[in-house]
Image (cartoon, rainbow, N blue to C red; front, side):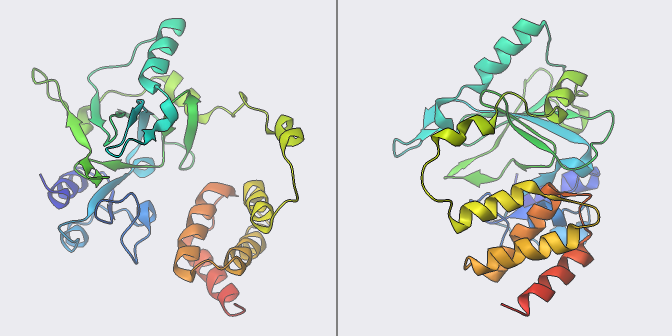
Length: 274
């Protein structure tokens, strides 16, 4: 099944989708990823036939367990840093006497990992993901690449038990422990303890990353985003890429995020001086 046909199926069931460039995890030129996800059939019919497919998990009310598996690419390079998320999840379930709910919709990723999909009882407050919630396990509540997209020449594949096919719409509801792992503050790592290991003068890029990580709350959002936008452009970033980046930064580091109209106004204003 082609990505466009799959996208139409999902959209007609109320799952917002967005296009990806062929063989890529990034949007086609002129598109903005999950921020433009849609269920509009006419919009999807205008997609190129060779585009890939992403799902807006946040709007769909879906969460994904992203399990890495150690392996190598066709040219011998290690993938996933040797982490085994399948093993880590199995150990976690045994230690806490928990089980994954069924029936479960799942996909295999191009490098042999797994995406396990679950519905949410309650929507998340904002698009969220937790990297390394367990070793080799990311929890996605914002967006995900979906079958039949291809990356590095290999597709995302729907995994089905032939005796009981499960659609994404019929997958089980996420238990509270999965939601808890996604939304709990990250406490396992203390970045402050690494300061003594860092050497050398902080670079312009390092200061920019620090500024982004600090984020902004209501009352300072516009000025903060304008400052970050200026810094990104000053670093020599292509304006089209800068625009895509500040959209992502707005979603992740501003609470609550600015609406698209305000983001566009900030970007246009800063561009006048660059």
